[in-house]
Image 1 (tube, rainbow, N blue to C red):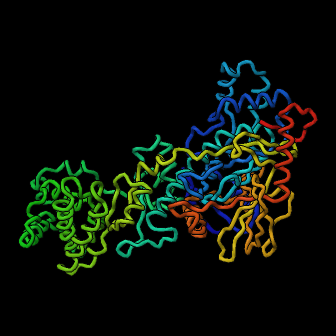
Image 2: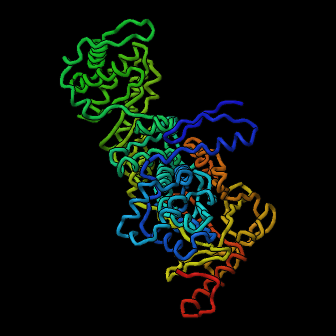
Image 3: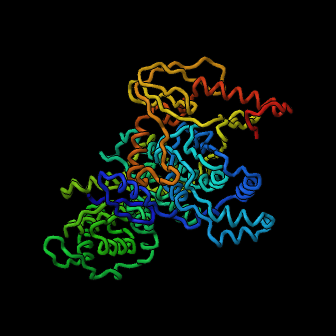
Length: 590
């Protein structure tokens, strides 16, 4: 038996495991409660409870149901989505239980006050997810419209009660992860091929202060990491998830210093000798030395220079300064150079500068020019490798523009546009009943995009000879499974065109069981690190045409011949039913 440390939400679990299946089973059920303690059975819409009562009252609550959670359109005018949220969904399912307080509240509410006592005392008091099965995509999967992200099956009453909360736990995480992935692709390319000064640009999340509340802030910090971000400024996220945290100082730190008198005598310990060195005196020596050749160094802002000295004394190992408080080039960058040179004499290598305003492309290139000049003059190669961090209201479009202009930014700090998903505020996942007591159910609509593909399904991804996804295929639960090397007929579910004939080089089933009734969780609890690695591999396998910025190519989502025939048979039956054909008992149209 060996020990493995797994970082998960607000719990650190040390799991002992070996080849013993019982040990693995026990470990797989060590699921923490939802991160947010608001995630309880009451975090739902009232109509879930009114429907549950209606099912119970008419003895339908134990009918076997199948629901699908999916979306109809990719966000951000793109053609792919990253699926996230299964971790919190599993926590919710595991710990689903009405408390006595919950039941008392519902019993005494005006909306449910007329319901029979047995509904509260016998049904809600004892209900849990021990009869529910959940199938899901893997966290970090690339997903496409109509393909289920989750399939929930079990008694109609409990499956209905899960709807609102599951949607809440999947919609935003998937949206913000997708937003992050698009920004990462814009900044460094689909394959990470983009280089700036021989570095692959890094991405840090800076959005907590403008996120939609604490939960929105934490969720954004967490799931943007799955989308490819490298670090966050959110300290709580760092503690809870074990992800890197980053940050330097704000303008206030610079503004709080007005004179070099404030930092007279500040010392830093020499890394080699251990002696205390007067950093201020050393900085002023360099100011005189550089000022003899470039008088601009003598005219930099003294308060800013004092702030940088104070910060250098505080963080000599990680010296990175915000340089745009007064004048980025004439003062900020030059003051940084002075302190960085002094710290180097004491054995410390500085990190770089941050830009938070102005023409980021031009300023970043100018920073590197100045650093390279110092590197040559003082024979200090590390100056040519310093980072330039930029953080000024950056979004996906700005990243593309910066690439077109050419820039020297080696790290992007992105806040508001990332965490609030300003380009599109919601993904639009839905949760639909597709089967009841073994019979498929359909929802009809005048808007074809809202017509439901009925019945319990399996979904497969078909790959071409380059191991790139070619299309997703949905089939009936008992339909023939597509196989490697065999011609597969793939139908558009609504178009009358001929089917696409495709011979897959590889076939991958997309959904697996993640929660199996009383057995509980059947997978290792998802971690950010694993989901991030998986998402990156998924994106790299996509055709570049799907992820391109302008007019991305839609990805094919098809159905089998059998599923298409069933869809259209139920569609026709549903149409007849809606015109008072009382002989139709094959489907329900809502």
